[in-house]
Amino acid sequence: MYVRDAKNREEVWLLDHIEAMGLDDAAFRSRDYVVALDEETNEKAGFGRLRVHKTDEGDYCELTGIGVLDAWRGQGVGAHVIERLVEKSGDAGFDVVYSFALEPTYLAQFGFEPVPTGELPAPMRTRLAAKRETMTGDIVPMRLSLEQFEMPERLREAFKMAVSVDEESTPEEAPEDFGIDPESATYKYDTGR
Image (cartoon, rainbow, N blue to C red):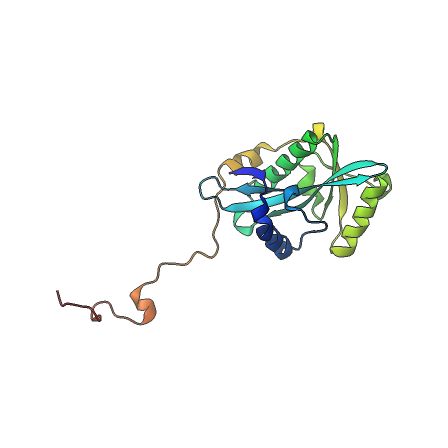
């Protein structure tokens, strides 16, 4: 498994999965995303977005739109998407990133801390209000100082061994599935040998 920047040709795939998962797609740009892939099959496993908010009072960085396909959940894929986004935010010159979480305990394991709404910078308060209008559930604003980021070892190991758990695998079809008795059936081109 590995995580890389999304490519333009993956835009439709990203939009389909963002919609299916009910994630935020405001101001969508595929170049803001990273994608987790299985290096053997090239199967996409998850994705996430680094969104930069440029304002007069400063620039702010948000991790958003993080999703993992059902067949890949519980295997550290989301954790590595987050790790890659944190690295990219540091490369872009940010010391702090924000995220708005429905499951704050998930982000807390990486070093994110809840932030009271009143302590958020004005642009992040505006973004929180917009997210609360479009999403259901209790959204908690979270903040991470990049030097506090920590990848739990269990998630690092799980990611190394991640495999798709195909829930829709279909068994191989047999002649009996079509009402054919293979012992007595003759076929159009059967030569009797």
